[in-house]
Image (tube, rainbow, N blue to C red):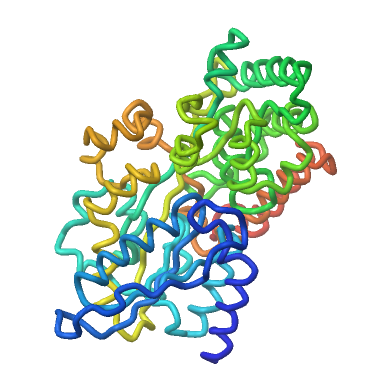
Length: 446
């Protein structure tokens, strides 16, 4: 079985894991990096090798390696940093195979904010190792990471969807950052057409994540919530997605494709959207905070990019950012759970979160850092959009429990069907409502 799991990790490395290392093009990164080589064996806790899974979106892998090396040097241990799929959907499937087999190949798992309820029974309780430091993190995230009284993961960074825009292009064409989706559509079309007429036939108005995966669930929840259409399933477990506001939201998004958004967006995840925007071929982009540091590091875009809250659905709508973020959890199948927990506490510490916020614009989960001048100088919108992050819209993972992944899968497929022109929004949501009602016995049994 261990050979089978190791083979799965190798396949993952070849298929997904080594892509986008340090923000580079796919296929350029090594899958694992061993840090701490040559540290004196007599140092405390020396001798163990801890494997940790890290994503590779933006600067994730680079920063993970650097912080892990700090810990390895300090403790005398070694760390294998394993890059796993960037797609949350693919990563969850891989994790479920590894954990379901009780394999010890990975000690520390980087998990999505929606996974504690799905994977929590495979992780140790970190309260015995935290020394109470969880009190400095956002309470809502700590509660999210607590399953059956166990703190199954420590918050590493939080996320919220944001609207990026080209400040120089808006100024050039006499436009302001949009506050509603209607304004965005009109502004994007105006600038797109003008720039194409001026010679850039590759220019698009708006790029986002339209591939059929968890990222589309995030985008679509933002649209639906901004129109006042709820969050698929309410806190009591009732399925609420089939409503006029949700229909209007999907109709609006479907209208972007082929007009201000390329048809190819139906295959875009985060990095594909960022690639178009960062190449100078999009006016607006929906993405997570990590994209800010990447844009600022680009000589062609530095100081030309602005960030605001995502638009409202209309005068009666609201700004809505999907709650994202990642946590670190220790496998109960680890051969060195205490040492792995020590690595988790280091990586999620105030010092490391500050470093990640400055270098990679990853949102801290420690409130105090949103007042830190070094952090605010590097990423000003952390302070300006603080309320956006704190009030981000959660996906219905708590209400749906272990069935969340099925719910999200049905949701993104329904949305995709509308975006691709296969099924009208009203019919798509009617069918989705029925499927989710059947799945939950009318919202009474998740």
